[in-house]
Image 1 (tube, rainbow, N blue to C red):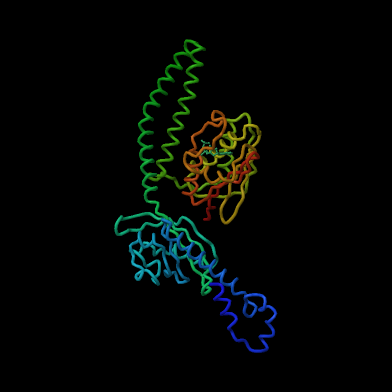
Image 2 (tube, helix red, strand yellow; image 1 turned 90 degrees about the vertical axis):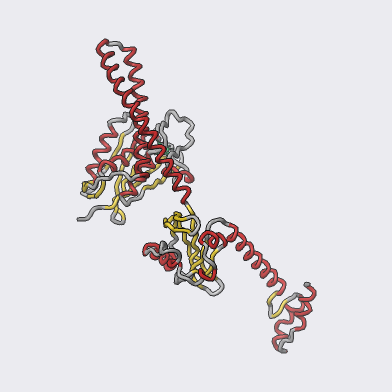
Amino acid sequence: MNQVKKNKVKKVELPATLKEAVQARNETSNSILGIDIEHLKHNLDLFKYSLDYAEAIVNTVREPLVILNKDLQVLTANRAFYQIFQIPSERLENRPFYELGGGELNSPKLKKLMQRVLNKGISFDDFEIEYSLPKTGKRTFLLNARKFYRQINATQTILLALEDITEKKNYEKQKDEFASIIMHELKGPVSTINGYLQLLDAHLTQREDKKLLEYTQSIDVQVHRLSSLINGLLNSSKIRAVGFEFHDDIFEISDLITQTIKDVQQTSTTHQISYEGINERYVKGDKDRIAQVLTNLLINAIRYSPNAASVIVTTSIKNEKIIISVKDFGIGISKINQKKVFERFFRLNTSNQETFYGVGLGLDISSQIVHHHKGQIWVDSTQGKGSMFNFSIPIYRT
Ligand code: ADP
């Protein structure tokens, strides 16, 4: 095969002057006009192999993938896309993406995001849509998009991946409903135990029975733990399942921060919480719930910094939002776990579970509250040095 190619090269007739110019090179190597044919062929094979390889991967993944041109028309799609959406290729190619289905994709917000991908190269993740499929009915998808440069005719395209999260969502909903029922059932007996405990306490105080009073106090601590756990679970599943009731107050945020710090400070003899107030800034939202977020962060900051003595609260303003930050000097969180701590029931494998008592609900509830207020919540942390939890809330302008 190589021999055949070599012979072919030698047969090419070059003009006399050009012949001389390239003669030295051509004599020893298999080249024409200074281009190594064998090398070129090898690269072409490699390119073809890469292309086949990429195509095989794209057609094997279960997630539907689709490539759109700059007018948001479909250029091509993978096998999963055709199978799931049941659209024949002749009806799909060159059609505007937002015309597919029954108008579910025709969202101005989605179009705007796609334009941002094309014009500014800003990718997006997790844009949720509902789409009715011919066989399986209404499904929920998460859309992720990336800009993709097509070398062939130097055009900008978008690679769009769709993830079907219907099952996951249903499962979450069932879990919430289940947790909600169990917690409601538990609430009754726990409050009865609490009632009898108070009676017993009063009785023993009257009799001045110090020994038994010590026992009832221990029971009291555990009953309190149990009811705060139940309330936490109820809050969490309520917010998700039926939507939590949020009040709309307009209030000065610095006052709320000062008051919340004062309340939490009373519960700690080990840590000093410092705060430098800001000028008057108003926000609109549920005052008690925002205080709950700050309380959660402060309690965590104290709990996860057993060898430190201070917690620092600061505020800053960015993009019309006030950012409230709680900094501690504790155990910190590794990079890999920093996103996960906001997931429900996520707890790090701490060696001493007793010291770090908790169930992994506080940050889940906090992030739901913050997102309800159109804010963000995130953490900056260095393992072994400490963490800074931050959340933002839009400033209210009259
Ligand atoms: P809980 O503290 O009840 O377990 P959270 O949802 O408040 O639940 O926190 C989830 C997990 O995040 C905790 O178990 C802990 O591992 C980690 N975490 C939270 N706050 C901090 C902090 N300030 N420093 C280090 N780890 C933290």
